[in-house]
Amino acid sequence: MNETTQVAERNQYAATESQEKRSTSAMTLPPAVDIVEDGNGVTLWADLPGVTRDKLNVNVHDGNLHIEAEAVVPTPQGLRVQHAEIRQPHFARAFSLSADLDPSRIEASLQDGVLKLTIPRREEARPRRIAVNVM
View (cartoon, rainbow, N blue to C red):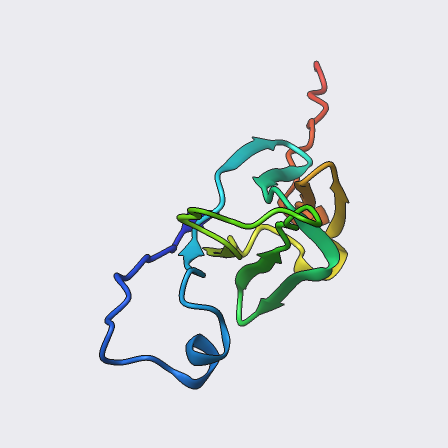
């Protein structure tokens, strides 16, 4: 699994339609990710604080895994925000999947702002023990 994330600076003069719809204090952040690989496959944990299931999009296309999410940071009623560096963070990250992994069997769960993805290895790519006969 190779990381292919690229983060570009936002050009204030070249805003796309989707960027214009977001507030001026929104920005795209790459979520922190931990990846563990073993003989069964890969487990990936992505930190997505403030993200709910309905604001999370995980998909696989052409051997690439894409994670995109938007956090909701509520302002308590009766209070006014004096300063907010990031008001509605937008998370995005992409990974290139190895041909040894089976994207059709990916399992995902979201708990307490942490996305866990389990990506199993294809059966034919799993390590297997070979019995040795003594003659």
